[in-house]
Image 1 (tube, one colour):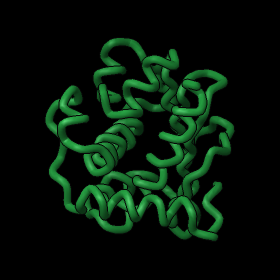
Image 2 (cartoon, rainbow, N blue to C red):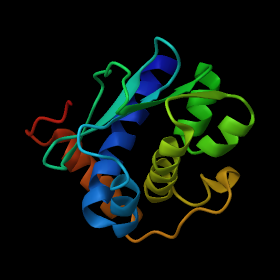
Image 3 (tube, rainbow, N blue to C red):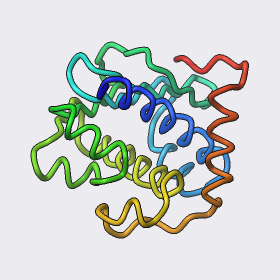
Length: 165
């Protein structure tokens, strides 16, 4: 059950990040830190579901569940347990707090990971109601409505375009 929940939430989080990347200048700013050819992975736990965000040579981002091999252009955030992953992915705990509590491992350069963590916080601020994300603390203000982000993410998920990196 936890695997299914994590997989669905990762897929929706990826779609939300792609929607915000097109419509929110703050998300664009966070993701411009990555060079073309970069791959960002969020893994629920070792062997668990994964979200891979990849930046093409043209600068376009794609989201999918295909894992990329680790290299110099890849950053991976791996939660240590299903419980830790579910708490952070559902917006009940921030990724930063999970890192401070030693619930997450970063594979790659930590400084390169920070824009990804801020992007996840921004996406969660747009995808979840404020009362739900209270444990995270201060989240950035929304620039899109909650429903606008949801409809955009659903359209992204069900669009016929190729979304897998």
